Image 1 (cartoon, rainbow, N blue to C red):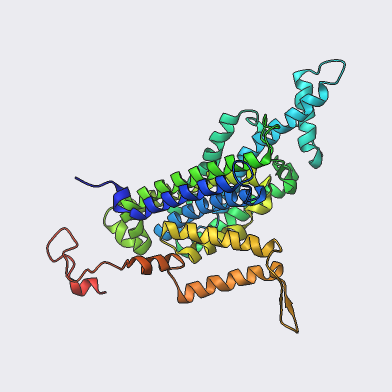
Image 2: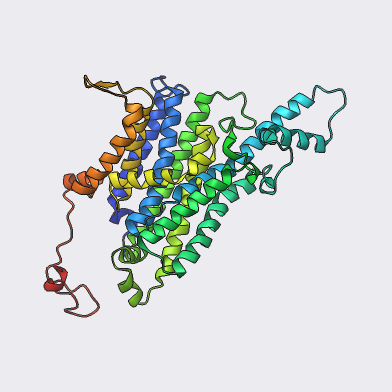
Length: 410
């Protein structure tokens, strides 16, 4: 009887338990439900960090396990934020406009209300009409569906064109980066329908929840982010634990050999690419309401490069390593860039960490790549005593002697 993959991968149970304990601890120490030790702003930071950990899991799945170095996954992350942001901004503006027009002597018509909402939202770019992309902005259900569909369809189209042409390696990375740059440049335009470089703002205000304090809503989002991270991690662990995981690791290590064995390499790569794009979109849909704003700068290619750095520092090819890397770098960067890190006087020059943090991050990436390729996650391998399997002449193929010690050592 085959055991559940949870029992075959105890690290998954450990991670889920640690995540649950972390969420409970933050809740009890928050301003909303507990002792007030953790401020509301820091609860939001922790919630956003969980969302970044979720997209890091997606990045590790597509890069660490399947070998596709995507420099465009933050585009899917940003699109998820835009999709939910349209509903949040529409409903919030509708509440404001409706309350304002209620003071008029003559009740406004539905069309007048819509026109007023359009003026409020798009007046900043010199327009008052709703673009076609806002056709479903008044429906939460449809916008939530678009959170999944828009990143998924974009990844499906891009992946199908790229993988069927057998673009691999650095060329594929450049293509994903070009896709991200093209999307960002398009969104910067005022006629994109998404307010150009102004982006969507005021997303932290949930419609119909005006009487609920931000301290409580920050905990709600923390719970939602933790739940999404737990489910995303569980899904990724299931994917890499079975035959599918063996195939995608084989594609990473020797794509030509896997194709020779009869597997549809392009199909597997496309599946992983689309799946991780959807996960990234969900992470973005939870992140930006906590951040309060989403704009095209969030989709710039540099963000996807940072994502790859997080995964590399945490430990590529280890789901928990991706979470550790994203969480560690996110919190440390908040400390450095938030002005909390003291300046370092050197006599002839004073290092201000707000300006030098990115240099430190880049050096950390280089050092990890050169001296600790397993990243921070490799430390846990040393602690738990995990080692590469001892092959030494074992029959590892369908026939006896198919892989002997001499071959295993190559």
